[in-house]
Length: 330
Image (cartoon, rainbow, N blue to C red; front, side):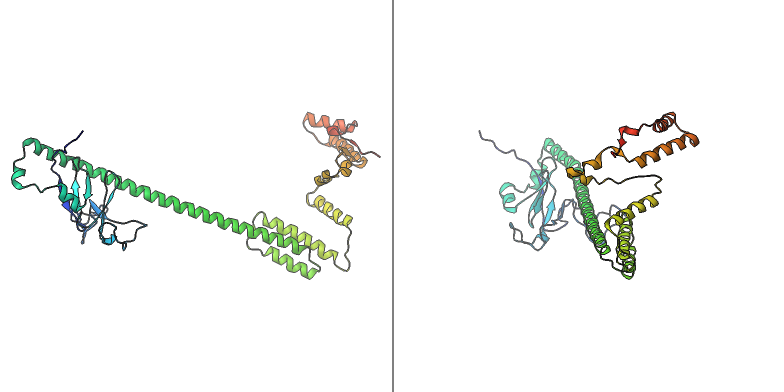
């Protein structure tokens, strides 16, 4: 089947520079201040061409002019570049789009004055309808432009926020890595302290480490204790065995934590070796059991408490070791 295009009268303006389109209104007041500009503003219909990835000095593939002298028009399809000499056509529903001069000349003839006067009432009404459509179309294009600008701004802000967060994370990771390396160096140097003079220098070093946080100050204390033990061990009046070193640690914990009564530390690494099975039996020594009975008896005489607690103390006094434990084998 074949069809013939209906004869349609369109409005068209040939564009060469900013402000050529009659609706560009380049001297409209500024929206924020209401002041009238001294020099022309960007056109409302044909705007400046700008693209982040296209230089203004680049030559156009279609006309050979540099992109700086081009325009941009928003269309129903998204938008088009406007070259110097392009015709800006207003379509039948008020939409605007560019047309190359050669195509325009081959497609359209200029309407003569007498032809315009010969328009029927129906044709005049059609032209009025087009004008109304154009007036309705312009706000939609402005809304579309504002929406695109808002989305572009939000995308830019989101990207900047993401880059800022990534930068902070990298900075924190770098600080944490540097901190871990510094603390590891403290423990290594603590083992190398051989005199009280070296000890003083070491303590000054770990205590002068910038602004200590909750974690680093504890590492500084522990490293200081290790360094003190090493320095005292190397003193002419020092010298201790491994057993004494263990007793020092146990006694320090007892005094620092104010532990009243017997206690023990459990090294679960020994579970890896079958010869240490006796260390994990649920038993207590005779001395510890005597102490527990003595404390339970004292509490019954001097301290009050919940009935369940009092009953628990009484069972200890009566000879029941708590929690299913037993006495060490003699």
